[in-house]
Image (cartoon, rainbow, N blue to C red):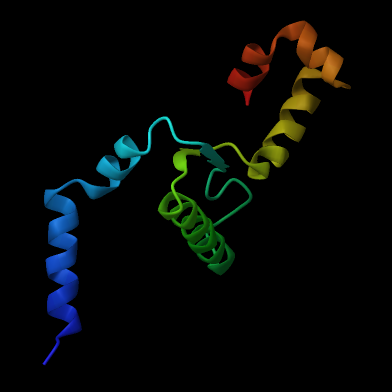
Length: 113
């Protein structure tokens, strides 16, 4: 009889011993990129069900892209969750347009965020 819990432990052990996640990324270096920059998990408040759901969907999408041959670099802290932070920084630095950001330098603006 097949035992799912035993199989799960064996599979996770194999993945861990062989560092499968990093190995898959290494093997796909040079392939077409699937760019996915995720945002900070709780920038807009305390964690709730929506964060878990969104995180699961984002994980599925990137895994699907990877299984279809794309090289997927995952970087956290980049998506629209930053918008409330950017708004606060715009107020603090009196930024009125993208020209203001260009004058101060994107690196300075990003560091402030």
